[in-house]
Image 1 (tube, rainbow, N blue to C red):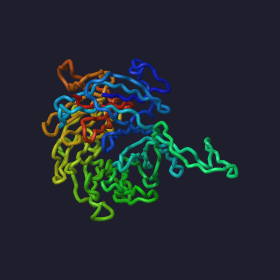
Image 2: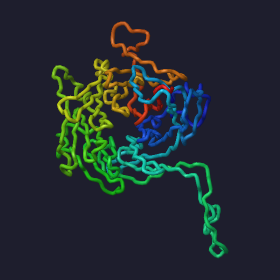
Image 3: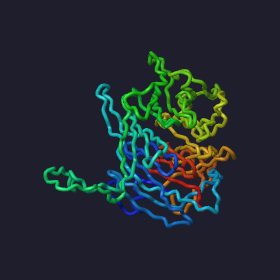
Image 4: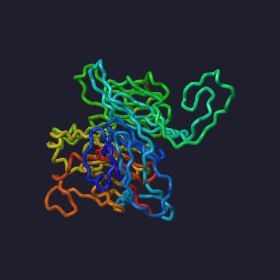
Length: 485
């Protein structure tokens, strides 16, 4: 397990001092986390508009190394690395197909690049302040030596190129070594410029800026499998962009009514199908999912499939509509299933069955009796994400008290784990946590009344091929890996 702490300003202190520090600013809170398609890079975005990219270490581990701690200055932030033993998930939630005789790589990531993706802006026409917070990051599949990713705040999507440079040209004819232009009359001979080796430099360059297309806040972006287009989604519209064209986009979904008083639902998330470039799905605040086919019509206001679970009238309450709102939707890697996360549950839908979910998993059903207090402190509006593992056999999502949940679809077993600095001991195996609802509490259980709702795991991601997960807990990034042989 590795923990990346993002809150120490300007000064590196001994690890024991760092671990006890609790101060952080709003800008340091992680707002999105995403592996690239190979899993070699991991990107995080925060509320300060910064993107930090981590790269996996290249060496192969045949045994257990020594724990280490080091810190790196990244502009106005410092990130602490605490290398501890790779943790094993209990209850077989990690089902690895790798032979035990084969050496496994450690899931250790170090800072590769950091850059300021977005700055705070102000819309003078609407007297509206636009936050720099990174809402989503999506990687493009790697085509050459460089890496490309899309990052978005509430209004603007940017395409970033991350590339390496380890050589510099020298021996110009019209410039001196300081870069100043030479007087042509002083040039008496011609030189052939040469490339000289230099220290490796990782550069992040904004290649495209896609702006002025959304009236409302962007909540999701998704790259198409054709590698030429992507969609950006706000509360009422879905726009289709070409990655090469920044001055126009095509509106493919528009649910805005002519009279805003008639508005009954908003779009909460959208994603392209992983194989079919013409298919995408979007979820709504009413708990429904619409599957659309761009081959049918240019404007996909009419869906081709509609997924919704009928509501049980006996369980309806004042909070029913709030907790049924879908905060995240994800296609499985196979493209056969859809996974959705609402406030209390994770549901898996078969694309061939629209009337009810194939599987329903209770994330924190013990909170059902506390909805009133959760409504009063606004926690009921938290937007949790969900993620598949590489084989679509296990799903993961976050909860409160820095808990995160895993569900094995084959064995139907589940486990609750905690991402905590206090529990992050070297060579430690994560122990399952249990929440006691009522009655006598056991020693290893925590009471539902003792849960800390200010500590929450909203953002999670899973390595596309291996059992490595990353979870963001406020301003800390935790990386866990299945036990290394």
